[in-house]
Image (cartoon, rainbow, N blue to C red):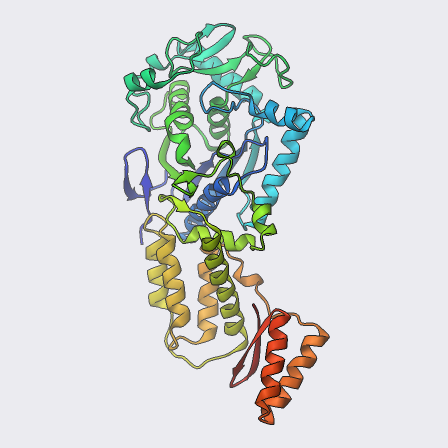
Length: 462
């Protein structure tokens, strides 16, 4: 069953065909480590994790590169605004190096909580200054750069198809931009290397052919992706906000430096997490929610992952605490169902092949996770499939879902709960329903529900 994915470059779904048979080169734009990741950021990484898991499920070997942006990213995605790393350092009265290390570790903790698989390669921008300088030098030799005001700029007028990913109306873009860098020939041009900027207290600086300075944001991804995945690779991912500037500029500088088209064969982008009147979640919006805050509100991180599975990655996902309640309840229901599959054998004789086929059909239709979840629940409710087969099939599905089904085990109960269970069973056998119900209520107050089955009472967490 062929995998089809939506390619932003051509604005339609197409059958995925890797450059090398059974091997996939995947680059996903990483996090700028000047603050905690918010749950909108994390939705994008969940989408990219699902893509990777689906590729693996289809039998591909995946080389996944994820960068850490620890230099060069200004608060605007273009060359405007405050330096993000410097902003974080001033806020916390620490060095930019300390800020980068701390928030890299916090980001990696969030990744682990959400059961997002580690990339094959983590790469930091500051560890690849040499590669960035080499790519800028190549662009300079080929006539794609100019020096102005002490900085090195990429000349977008030299690229005939500049803006093809975003399908930019360049004239309208020029008219709409208010802030202007007077050193630029065009508002679309962008900085490859800063030697002079408005940040006089910039700590992160390196020697270069153009003077001591630091790289612009866009060049890091081109340099690192090329180093680890080659001059042309299969899939590049990010959020939709990367389309008009960051990914557009990556394409222009990479194809110009490497003399290759296309640099990337498939571009995939995740939509925003939104709140209220379709307003995206973000630090500048004042609706900045971290995964830790969501946990403090009583939600399991995997309930947030489950929440994200319920909406297609190319559609905005509306966040609310009521929606999180529903996701948490569904996640708990799935956990309890897994315990039932393990502890309560059944005699159904139907196999799960049709469900496996439907599940693969859903995930291979451009990562249709809502449909895949519907298949999961349809299988779990089908009484003609015995629980042993259901559990084994669910483990296979979880290679994609990433909900940690294998780690769901029988509840470890305290001595108090065990005694109450025994007393209730004794009361039930004696048909003392009043006492049995009182004990059931007591167990509920301790966080457990109890279900009577032919093979004995089944205890579940609520």
